[in-house]
Length: 458
Image (tube, rainbow, N blue to C red; front, side, top):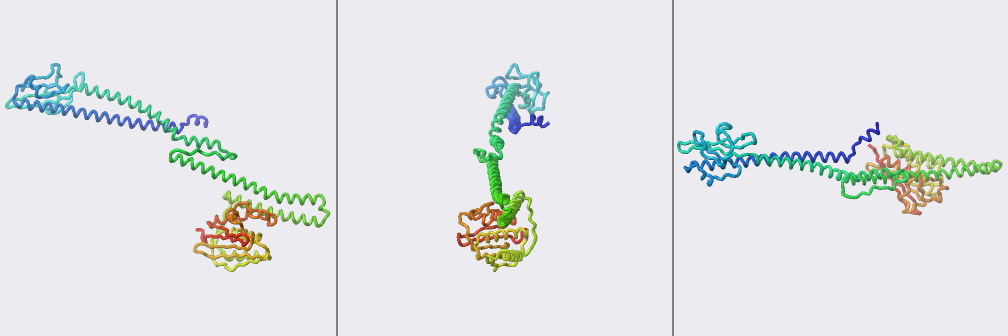
């Protein structure tokens, strides 16, 4: 069934050509009909005017009292094809300009003074009968014109217009094929480019040139789409590569300690305890990384849904400060500014953001350093600032710290246990809340992360 339908499919080019030909044919037909109609009216009007003029000239001649004979031809101009007859009161023929003249009864076909058409066995005749009075005498004047030239001209015009219409349709088909192919050429390029593109080869692009029209815009849109796809695939490949690298490290460490235990560590209590402790640490780090990766994957697939509710942000920050002081006694946690404000947000997600940022501040701030946590309302937003006195971030590195798996101090990654995923999660959550997050840092003088969240999402 599909194969049958495919074989019967009519291409856009053929449809455009057919539409073009039909429209042009209709236009030519309308023009031809109008042309014939106008020509008929103009010629008939001219013939009638000619007959009326001759009739009036003859009338003037008769009323002048001159003798009715061939001298009338010197004063009345009779064009070729004009037949003139003058009858007496008894309807006897007094004068005619042609011997082989047409025969029309002076009273049979129409009323006097009315131009009409008569038919003989061969053609149509246009004529006018008129009564002329001179003193007490009555004359009948008949002026007629054969329409054989008129009919022959119209027949010739019909033939010419038919031939023109036929040639017009042929030209319409040829030009329609040419124009449709030229117009649809960019679509063919798009189709061929799309066929040549695969996941492993996204470098193909449409050669966009020519007039600035909708098809060019379509090509540019297609190229933009491929650019985004390529960027997405590259990011996905990089994500998988980085995730594999991050997971490979703890697995290698765990495998190394297991080999030690298997060889001789089981009999050495100190080695046994050290191995178990390191395996636990690496397992914890790996579990944390997997959870972060799953979070990002759900976010990318739009499967992670935020649960919005109203709560006091200052109370959440108080809880975070107290928790941090309990688990970290090597740094001074300072919370002098914490304005009372109710926001509409996901409580757990905002708490996760703050934990990630504070955890980074702790990792990169020397012992006995200070960490400031502040919040205050600003119009329809609330601003949260987490500032430390740590090592700082080089200026050239700052635009990338929210990228996945990006670490500024790569040499310390093992010591800090960071994977470079935390800040990416924080940025994702903030953006989902229609907020903004930015960094201000100076090398050797500390870092400040600033978060702006709308107080009400709706």
